[in-house]
Length: 273
Image 1: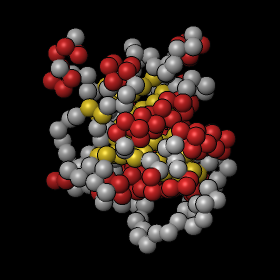
Image 2: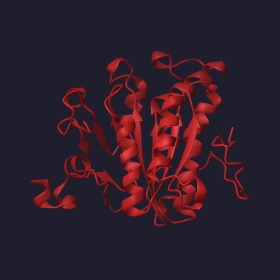
Image 3: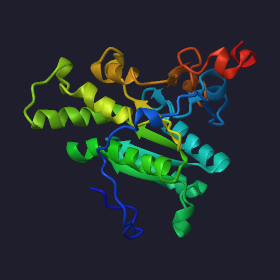
Image 4: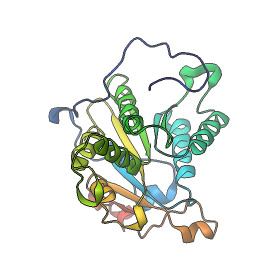
């Protein structure tokens, strides 16, 4: 756990932070809403993201979730010079490798000059034990907190997939012999999710804006895992298989996607109308 896997040698670091930490104090929070510009027109116009907010990315296999994530990382790095952290929680190793290669080819990761790289990738793929998979999301979040609190930057945090974080917690709970809750999930589901999500926020120092891919088991939105996730989201971006089949990318469904930022007082009357 915590070892580099890019074959570029050991990470020279002296300072460490615990992955289990408290959320920022109420007095440190930045409460004024502002829009996080992504550079993707359909998102910025129809379902804009909140700076320091949490966005759910919904879509089945093969509709372009990972490609949209790559585009966002690239735009933030190139247009804003901003940093991103990607947490691959319980997903396929092949997808993680594809993302790494894509980031190298686009220059977002620079192997010859690592300090100039604009993204950190943290992986705990589906072949890892549940304890490791559960910690990956928290590890990526702790890295993002470093950029926000110490470097005073605006950070983009990707979690792919937040459902796998819940699933890993369920496995750990079963191994500990706890009594299962609804649909076999862990009794501490809401607590674990809240502990992660409450740390993702804007402070007076900087912000963490999180985009989380959400797998919906059997397309059942009432399942406890996605239902618990919904309570924390500021916006949802829904990818449509019908649009993807027509070759329209990103396949964002503007009618299904939502945003709390789409209000006249925030985006202005002209944009809203």
